[in-house]
Image (cartoon, rainbow, N blue to C red):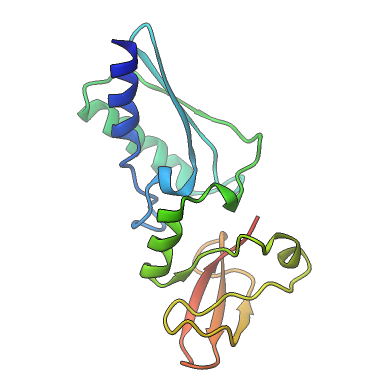
Length: 161
């Protein structure tokens, strides 16, 4: 019974979307770390993409509401900062959704290059690698603003970390 309750709770929570990138669920992002059920009490563990991410309060509220809709009340939502979230936790499906939404997904091999400002994002609109960084911060702190030199369109790129 506990496994069934845990599965139902997990499935409910896994549908919660990121308020800043609504095509991604918190499961796609890797923000959803764990769901446990002990003595009927649901505990959800989440990790923010950035410490102080303003979306986390909304995400916690949405998690609670998803659990209530699934028949669970009084859930505990726990935020953990260690280990720190990494773009490696994005699912393959999440990366595809980012690209389809017009946001360049992070390069899996870009971690070290990104630290030295050498990472470049391919254009999610035309696929060109001829892009330029316009600003370290895009529409949110977890994205940078780029422009494609081929199609001339600006786009956000999810930062590697």
